[in-house]
Length: 121
Image (cartoon, rainbow, N blue to C red; front, side):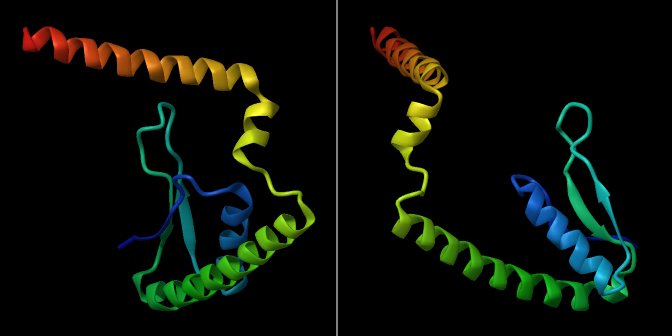
């Protein structure tokens, strides 16, 4: 029976590729499911053979620990060099998108607040 190993929701392409490579290099049989046409299905990596689950889980845990250390070191390096992306950088990179999202958020808050006030009357 197939068993889920790794959910792919919000996972970057490079991490997904590294997990695929890890499983392939260790001769672990797996397959993937996509989010589907409407994005309502669960994208994940599944093991074809339950007997390999413990080995795959141990490999995945070791990989994730190593990746965590690597990403933190990279972030620290970028921060030291002044190249890390901040909130202000993201706003300046796409000010129109930020303004639209902010306006929509404020509109939702306003409408919600007005609804509560109207119901209180």
